[in-house]
Length: 557
Image 1 (cartoon, one colour):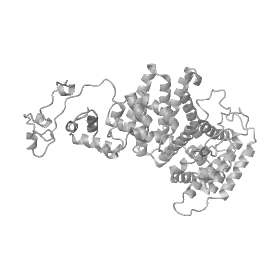
Image 2 (cartoon, helix red, strand yellow):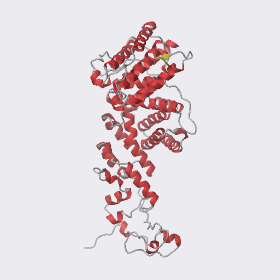
Image 3 (spheres, one colour):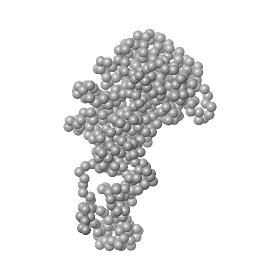
Image 4 (cartoon, one colour):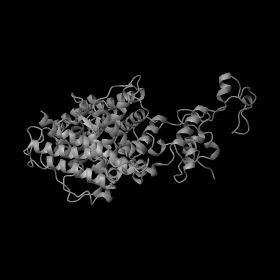
C-alpha cells in the first residue's frame, strides 16, 4: 500500500556539515546519524559537527500558547522539565526519537553548545506546567491559540515569570495562588488581550530589575520594553482599538510606574486615562464594570498614599456619599479602617492577634470611626473642617498616643517570638497614626518635621520609621495573610510616611529607595487582596484612610 509523503519527507535533507562547509571540504557522513562525519571525527582539537536542517515553512499566526513555554509535555513529572525544548516539541509532533535528538528551533540549530545550555537552564528553571497555575490558564491558552509577543526565549521566560510570580505577588499577600475573582475575570482577559501580553513582559522585566536592586530607568531592558509598549499603545489609540481593552492596559501602566517609582509618569498616565474616559462620556458610558472597579480602587490608593485629592472622581457628584457596605464580610477583612463597630477582643483568635495587639487595633479603629462617621453622609472633608470639634478629635488621638507610649510591647519570650514582632509593628504603626492626627501633621511630612523634636516611642521620627520598616519585614507574609484588613492599615501608614528618597549611584537604588518601593508595592498588594475578596470593604477601608488624611490636611491648612 503506497502512502502519501509529507512535506517534511519531501524536503531535501542537508548532506554537508557546517564544519566541512566552512573548510570547503567534501563531507563524508558517518553511517550512524548520531555521530560525527568521518572528516570531523579525525580533527584535533575536536569540533562540533552539525548538519543544519532546512527552514520549516513559515506559519502565518503567532506560536501557540503551549509552544511558548519550554518544559516537557508531561505535567506530572517535574524531572521531565530538564529535557530540551526541541525534543519536547518534536516528540509531540509525532516525529521519531532519533529525529527529535537532531531537531532544531527556528533561531539556532540543535547541537550548538551555547544554545543547548541556555535552553536546558531555562527549562530546568521552569519546573511545572501551565496547569500548575490553574485549569483556566491551560484551557484558555490552548483555545486562544496565540500570545502576541515576539517568540524569543527571553520573552517566553518573562511571560511565564509574570504568570508564576508577578501576578500572584500583586493580588496575594504571600504571593501564593490567585484569588477566585482574579481567575474568573482578570486571567481570561490577560491571555486574550492583544495588548496586555506586551505589558506583562514589561512588568516582569521591571520586577526582576527591582528585585536585583537596579533602577529600572537606568537598566536597558526595561527601558527598551517600555518604549515598545508605549509605541504599541499610541498606535492602538490612533487605529480605533477596543476602548475597554485599551483602558485596562493603561491602568496597568499606572501600576508599572507605581512599582517603578516614577511618580511623574504615573500621574501623567492617570490624567490621560481620566481625559480619555471623559471624552467617551464618563464611567457610565464605558459599560465595563471591571475597569471602573480597578480605577476607583487605584484612585483611592493614590489619594491615600500621597494624601492628595482624588483624581478620577474629582467631578463626580456623589464622590463623598457613603458607598454601599455589604451586609456581611469575612472576619479576616476587619481592621482599624473597617466602617462598623466591632469587638476585636472576640476576633483575636480569628485574626491571629495577641491580646495586646488586639487592644492596639481596637484603639486605632475607634479613632478612625470618630473622624469618618462624625460628618453627615455627603460631607466634604477636603473643603471644610469636620462638624465634630477639631479639638475633640485631636485630644482623643493625643490620649491614645499617650497610652501607647506608656504601655510598650511586652519583652519577647525568645528571639523568634513572632507575636512580639507583630505587636511591635502594630504598636509603631499606631504611634505614627495617632501623633499624625493629634498634631495635624500629614504622615508624608511627619519624619521631616521642621522642629526635629517629634519623638515616636522615644526615638526621632525618622529612626522610628526605620524600626517600623524592620518590624514589618520581620513578620512572615503568611501571618499577614490571615489579617489582610489589619495589614492594609499598617501598609497605608508605612507607605504614606515615606517621602521621596535620595537616588543611588551607578544605576543602583539607595536603601531608602528600596524601602520606599517595597512599602508601596506591599500596600498595593494589601489593597488588592482585600478588594479581590470584597470590593465594597476594600473601598470602605481606602476611603476611610483617605478621609483621615483629608482631615489632617484641612486642619493643617
